[in-house]
Image (cartoon, rainbow, N blue to C red; front, side, top):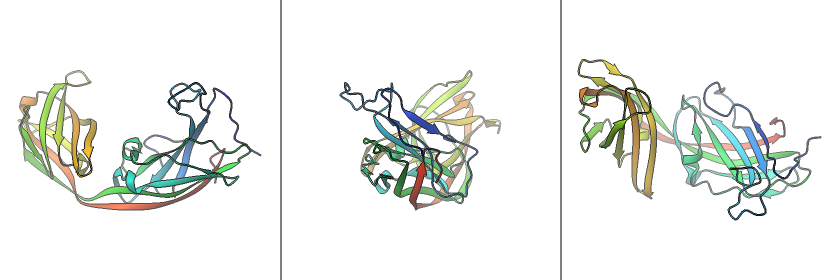
Length: 263
């Protein structure tokens, strides 16, 4: 019989398949990893004896939507409950920051959701059950169009449904690359892909290099960073693929697992 055991200074951790790529796309929600760490009695901030790790139970839940393109997670409409085999209920932390903590796969068909509890399972527990639901915002009906642009700091850009302002142009993270920082009142999640084109009609190697947001309620400001090769002054067009439809998909979750992550 497997039992959850807590040792001072050690976190029991199992991690199978956390990351992007290679995931099956047609299965039910599953737990792909978890860890437990005992609270450091001398910590004022909830740290565990394991360096850099918060005390408590950390569960990593994978949700797949093979027919949808996942854009983000609605933390306010996502909630989970955790119970151990001894019927002890473990209070899950607030999910309001779930959209920042979630890890969406490169193909945008699955996502890893972190479920965190400050309490540890009871002594002798042999399994845990995660129940609740996740609300995933998805895009559909993608459309591609090419528009004329000029990249200059302070200028406004119209990228499909997103009106953005060029905040900064600087050196990129790779040799001979440039970094373009945009800001908008529209979410950049509406854009599936952006590729810059130079004055000769050649597509420029373009890749996303970060994103963020700040604000409250309906008054949000979004930022997006793109990295590209070449001279910003020579960029003449942008090929934009954006979503024309959006939907919120609620996924019910009821997963029981043991120490080997089996159901």
